Length: 393
Image (cartoon, rainbow, N blue to C red; front, top):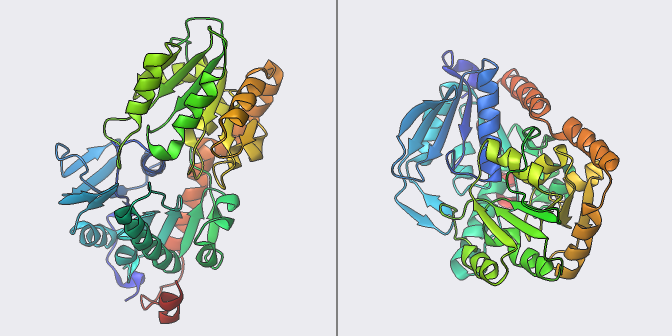
């Protein structure tokens, strides 16, 4: 079947993603920003997602995007079990010019197999789950599914070549039509320092309060800073995160050290104010593919200290606006935070300018729009996949 034999599509783009807004993660923020950004530019966009919260409507139009949610019957760790999800994606994809799939996703192979329209897959990260038999099985299935989906995609987006070249699926990624498009990052300048109450050192973390963010190492690093006027601001969701939170460990640390402040989930102007309140950003992750929050901090002139992880270190490497430390090393993290916090206003302004050039939303949307137009205009494609590719994925 060729995509050129289909009737005139209702949508320019169908986005397939397991979790979608109001769920908050780096992956879902990329999906939302691209979908809403292209809709604002006049594209007709639909999103198919799992209904992670039963209170959400099955269909709605939000910020110019048609959202179709599919019921969830159970969960496995972070994974949502929704048997109707692949069929719903195919249904909406048939009414679209291009299908955009966000990986990792357990259903990716089922969705991309014999897709009626060209497929662009964004491969965000190698799936990382805490140790455990069920999690190991889920990671293996997701890895296999992603490998097949990547082979069957007309084009593949990665956040950076650094991420791709060090991925466990590099053997597959290196043979794809691969494009490096950094995650879209919002200009958060113009905030007020509402979370600042002293002239001491202010360190900030913003993200999901989950094991892969390495927050225990940040707590240990901060505990070794003697300054009584120093503060550690921790913002992010811990109530609806998939796979469990580490909020209890953070609360225990805050009960011992009143310098630690837990801000909870921030949104809108609160995020701008958060960046305006800190001197240095910390991203001590043990698994990371990019780190939108650290790039947005850089765009505000705030240097980031992050761990030496492929993809996650890319924003610092690309801009020079921060420092990179070994994974799981509180002593090195402490020293780097203190060093970066002392950078001059001029150095901060230069780093912010480089970050804006590389990571701004409009540039990201330009690149995605051009890619979607390119694959949509390509000659008709065969839906019969290479069996050798299936055996070697």
